[in-house]
Image (tube, rainbow, N blue to C red; front, side, top):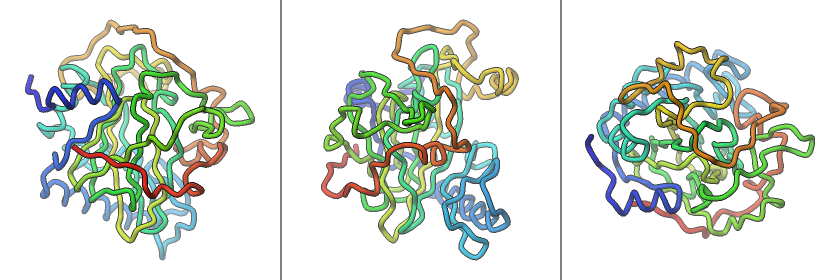
Length: 302
């Protein structure tokens, strides 16, 4: 199995719960993905509300299309499935998760200039706990990414701590941590910045979020949620369908014996009042981004 991460990068991921690989994806493939995204945004003029492909920004119209997420881009357009076969992405993922890897899901979060929506602090693990936590998210930066255009922030080391409560005051799952009650020091957050083609990996238990895009530049982040093949979801397998679940093997061979490792788990139940995406879920929670100036926080790339 090819190796791409250095010992220092592997140590960073294990200790801090994230790592950024600069300029991993080549320019020609990036251009094809940006072209595919532009095509999808253009097609969004035909719809008026969220559907199985699009999550729309408030204020979306046919004249001014505003898309904040493409759902399951690996299904929607072949170039996003093709990227999973990129040798660098494959090698880095296998460095972190082992030879046998399953795709849990994908999404393409779009922060258009001057209005791209923030994502509140959360842990992916709260949405989809598994029998073990060899679960990561690979974030492919389709644009040059900085604090100004809405880079993702992570809180180093939080993957080794608790699973925080992601429920609102009504007791329902809301997909966000209460920033006033969790006891986290958000001043320690690091921004995952890098030139287009860089890829961040963050552990499913790492607390992360992103501010609104206040710049005149776009920031699009393609996310693949990936698991070791022996990590089995604790929810929704029957809903997904067994054959579809098997079809999501991307590297190596499937495993029929789940590996069970103790990890702090909270189930996302009762389900969120507002369904459809994390953006809708989080409308029921407390806000952090948009009220606190993100300027001055440290950033990191490697």
